[in-house]
Amino acid sequence: MTEGTPRTLPEPLLHVSLTEQPIDYTALTERVRSHRAGAVVTFLGTVREFTAGRRTLALDYEAYEPMARAELQRILAEATEQWPLVAAVVEHRLGRLELGEISVAVAVAAPHRRDAFQAAQYVMDQTKRRVPIWKRENWADGGTEWVHPPEGMPQRPGDAAE
Amino acid sequence: MKASGEPGQGGECVVRVRVFARLRDILGTDALDVSAPCVSPGKTTVGLLRQAIGAVAPELGSLNGALLFAVGTEYADDTTVVASDDDVACFPPVSGG
Image (cartoon, rainbow over all chains, first blue to last red; front, side, top):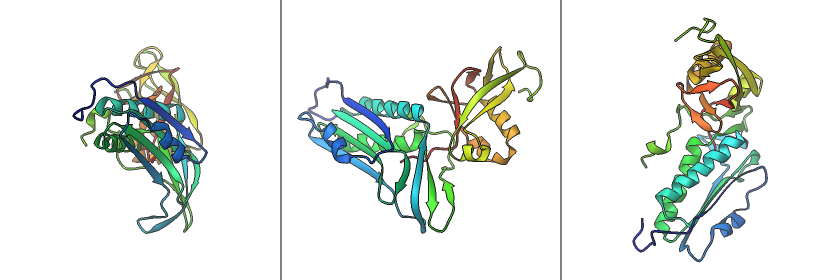
C-alpha cells in the first residue's frame, strides 16, 4: 500500500461488461474518474493487422458469457485486494472486429499512479490468462483459425507471481 | 480408474457439456451429452468426462489433454466431482484480449 493512503477506502466502483457494440473508452474512463483519485490508467487492446508477418482481415470473438463475467468480476475483486483502488472497470467486445477496433478496455483509478498502473496490468494479464473468451483469425491469405495458446490450465490467482 | 462401460457404483452418468470455439467446430455442435462412469450415484468426475470425450472424438488428438473444464462459472480440474445436472462447459485454452 502506498504511503499516505488511508487504510480504509470506500468500496471501489467495479464494473464488467461483454458487448457486441463498439467500446466507448471515453465514457469508460470518465466512469472511473473521481476526486479521490490522483491517477487514472486506461488500457485498450486493439485488432492488429500483422501477426508474425501474416495479415489479418478481422477477428471474431466469442465467450462463455456467464463464466466470463464471473471471472472478470473475480479479477477486479482480486485487484482491489492488492491495490487501494477508487474504481476498476473492464469491458470486452464480442463478435466481428475490424482492424484497429478495440477488443478490450480496462480503466483503473487510484489515489497514486503506481497502484493504478500495476492494477491495470494485473487486470489485463489475468483477463488474457483466465477469462473464457476466444478469438478467431480471418487471414488475408484465406482461411480462418482459432487462436488457442498451447498452455494448459490457466494459472490461478495464487500462482500469479508477477 | 475404470474403463468406460465397466459398471461402476452406479453405472453410467450422462452429463450435458457445452463446448466452445475450436472444440465446437471440431465436434459440430455447441453441446453434447457425455456418458461417463459414475463414481457415486448420479456423479462422475471431470477426468472421466475428458476420457469419454476423447473416446467419442479421437480427432481431438492432443487438444483433448489441453481442454479446460468449468462447473458452474468456475474452473474445475480432473478430480472435480460433477453431478448429472451441473452446468458443465469444456473449451480450449482461452485467447481473449
